Image 1 (cartoon, one colour):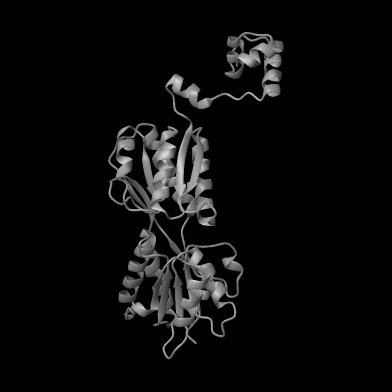
Image 2 (cartoon, one colour; image 1 turned 90 degrees about the vertical axis):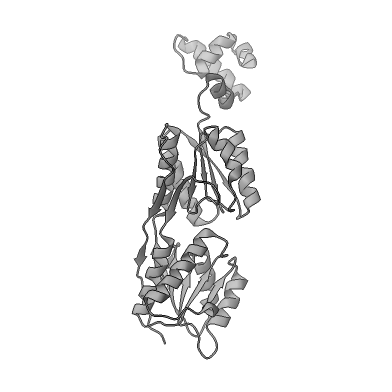
Length: 328
């Protein structure tokens, strides 16, 4: 500010009035100050200003698994829209499904005095957040719950969705249904497996653990699973993909297969409706998930002191054709 004042030939107080849009500055003077600011590349330190005034930093933190995944990109966008309506910006980081990285990101955002934290948890131990929450930083978990603390949580109906997928396949005559999902240590994968088991029971289908593959999805791991599940004397006639990443790897593995099983994906994904046949999915509104979590967070920021809430959002079957194919 001293450099700007010197270049513009005004006092530091005048520079302060201009950058803070205060009245009583002559337009010509303000123009000289703005020209000096532009020439010097001056930027206000908003953090320092807010700390001095005792106000918020104007930011919230969002930790997701992988911001490159279209699911989390859409989630991030929904959170940003709500944050913008409250005059906040969003700082986003990817945990890469690593609990240590999650903790590092959360504490880094807290050290920057964000107004609140949204977390898609990678781990099951969140005691490190208790001091931050006691100090007044609201925290909302989304897509998955916290492991060992009680906190606001927004989820989708993972169990009900997989039950519906099994019922749809059973309705079209399938009895040998495979389930491919992420690592069982991940909450959503574990809940969807529970739904798969429950769906089998409800539809009178024997649960066969040999038809279940749960591991970090890669082209190689899903490809190997497809070869095993679709060959032999009693192969699977249908497959449920536990998430959008599994579904994409599954479709690639089936690209040149002689026999295509029926298929339903939990989570919609881009171009799923344009394939042949179009992919049936268990869909949920990712934007609604982000909105609900962000709105709950800002209710806490504004002083809501009610008991922690658990919100479960509905899912629904979108029948496009791949899940409606009868066994060959």
